[in-house]
Image (cartoon, rainbow, N blue to C red):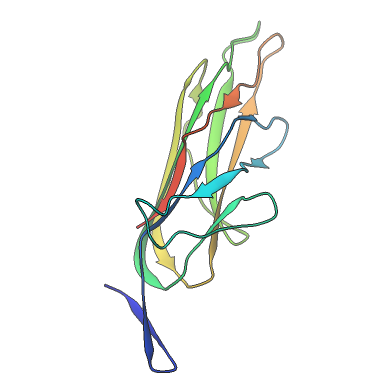
Length: 152
């Protein structure tokens, strides 16, 4: 287990997580942050959500080879005349992109899953961005409540 010594006090890494509260339209045209998260302190006691739009999960201690995972359920991403709506998600730590879904997921409903393993530092903030590519006559879809981001 990783820990940091600060002024003689050990700060132990605790797994953390946040859950999506409410729904949100899937961003189109350019990557957009998924906002409206709440800390999952019941399952992950080290959880702190930050940002004015409740968009980031803050790591409270260092962890070597931390696994960061996001699962983003969506609905109503309907096919247009030119084909299926294609959806993607990616993870950022601070301003750096650390993982992106390799192959876009097609609607109308499903879950966008993206993960990465890397060293995380106390104070780092994990955010999730999404993007929908919509054919004419199609719809971008809606991000559902209940998705999650976890640092373990």
